[in-house]
Image 1 (spheres, rainbow, N blue to C red):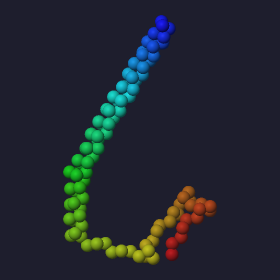
Image 2: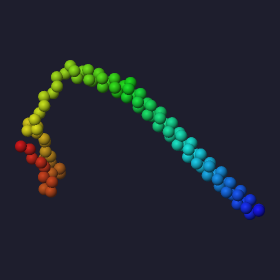
Image 3: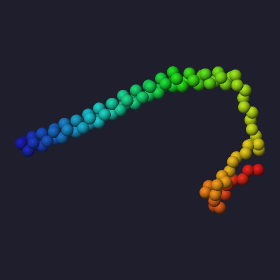
Image 4: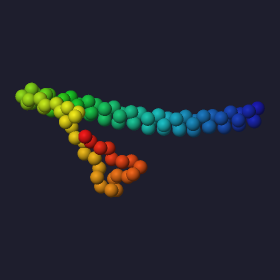
Length: 97
């Protein structure tokens, strides 16, 4: 009976220590979740109160400005690298017509 009682007492101590460890992990997780929620709420507030207001102003301004002319693919000229360090025989720079 004494051996069983000692084993039960040891298991109880181990369980208590492990519960404390898990409680510490849960406490840390709860703190992280609170910080995450706070950061998320700040981001949503900033989006609605600052960014969206500026975007709306930009949209209103865009109505007053003429649309840019489209450039055809043939008219667009892409600049190629010309510096020897940036061009190699293995990978020649693309040419434009």
